[in-house]
Length: 297
Image 1 (cartoon, rainbow, N blue to C red):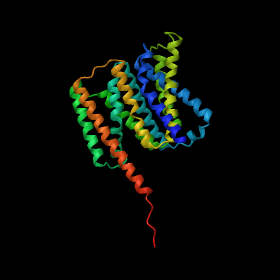
Image 2 (image 1 turned 90 degrees about the horizontal axis):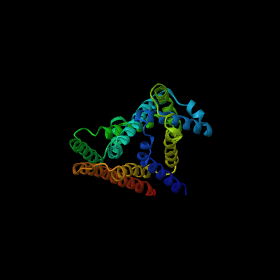
Image 3 (image 1 turned 120 degrees about the vertical axis):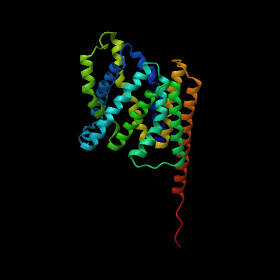
Image 4 (image 1 turned 90 degrees about the vertical axis):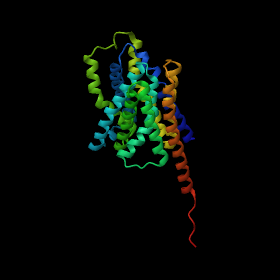
C-alpha cells in the first residue's frame, strides 16, 4: 500500500512539473526576472509555514558550515534554473526547455563520474556519446548552441550534486536555498518596476501562487522518495519533458524541423540505452542478492 501511494505521489509531482509551461504565461505582463523574484520570495513564505507546522526548526539548526556551503551553491544553481526555465517558456521555446530535461539525466551521470568518482558501464558511455552527437547536430540546426537546454540541464544537474553533497532534507534544503536568494529577489521587487499592484487581484494572486506551485510538487516528491525505489522515480521523471514537449508542439505550436527531430531522436536513443542498461543491471544485482548462499557441510 505504501509503495502504491508513493507511486501516486511521485506521478503527481512529475505531472505537475510537466504542466508548468501552462502557468508562467498567465503571469504576463510580468517579465521573467520579476516572476523569478516572486517565485523565490513566495516559495520561502510557503516553506517557512511548512517548517513551522512540522516543527523542523531543530533540523535547520543542526546543519553544519560544510553543508551550508553546498546548499548556498545549490541555491545559486536552482535560481539560475528557475530563471532560465521561465525565460524559455515565456519566450515560446518550450520544446528547447523539454530538451534540457531530457538531457538532464545524462548530465547527472557525467557529473557523477567527474565529482563522485563513479564508473560508467559500456552502455552508459554509449549513451553519453550519442547525447553529445545530438547536441552537435542540434547546434547546426539551431545555428547556435541550444543554450537554454544546456543551461537547464547543467544547472539542475549541479543542483542535484549539491543536494547529494549536503545530504539535507528536501524541506530544510529548500527553506535555506530560498532564504539565501530572497534578499536579492526582495531587493529587486522593492526597487525595480513591478506589475504586482497594477493589474488587479487576479494577477497578484497568480504571482503569489508561484510559491504554492513550487512547494506542492516538491512535497509530493519528498513523500514519494521515501516510499518507492529510486529506479521508479528515475523512470517517472521522464513524464516532465514528455509533457513539456507535447505542450510545446500541440498547444504553443512550436516548429520542429526534420533535423530537430533527428536531434531529439538521438537524445531519446541515449536515454533508452542508459535506462535499459540500468534496469538490467539492477535486476541482475537483485537476483544475485536473492540467491541463497551454499551451506557449509
